[in-house]
Image (cartoon, rainbow, N blue to C red; front, side, top):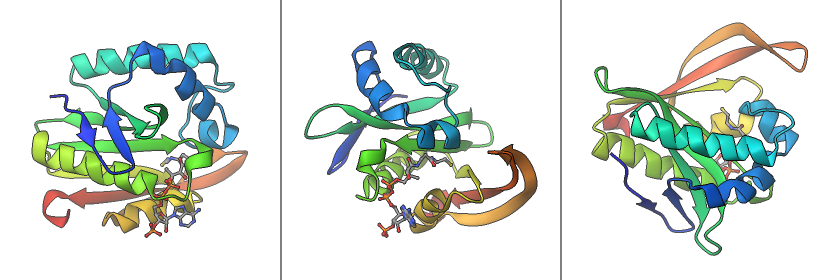
Length: 177
Ligand SMILES: CC(C)(COP(=O)(O)OP(=O)(O)OC[C@H]1O[C@@H](n2cnc3c(N)ncnc32)[C@H](O)[C@@H]1OP(=O)(O)O)[C@@H](O)C(=O)NCCC(=O)NCCS
């Protein structure tokens, strides 16, 4: 089911062991580890283990995790993936993070549009959803800009930095893309 996805500023591709260093450099920031969430502290070994997990999940058709590749350098600057792939109900959850120094340049928007096209056209899914902490404004805005609709709010769904937080559910259907 894999296909490399070609964009303008970035491509989406499978990650390989040699990507571990750049994934580590971009993921170790606590603002990323705390929101996604990733292991903390995030080490080079965390990235190496993660790459192996991604490869296994691709093989088992459980997840489709793509590295966000900077076209200028070929380096992986973030990750975006389809999780909880459910081919029977034609749906999946999307999750993503991007290295902090690349924020605010439209990169996540490009990556999200590429993976939505892949999900709806290649995997023939019908619904993609995302779960976002209510205080994560950048992520909610990104989803809205890509035509996701706010579908619900799970009140006080979990604790974040010692404070209760609501969880927002966003979704997009194939014919809304
Ligand atoms: C969420 C995240 C991926 C956004 O990446 P990004 O590349 O900076 O986003 P983009 O530049 O593509 O922005 C897309 C849209 O979201 C909005 N947006 C992005 N950051 C924003 C911010 N800080 N405040 C308000 N709106 C914001 C912009 O309006 C933009 O729309 P526009 O292009 O029409 O102006 C990035 O902030 C991140 O990695 N955060 C940490 C991890 C995380 O939160 N992951 C999601 C967990 S649910």
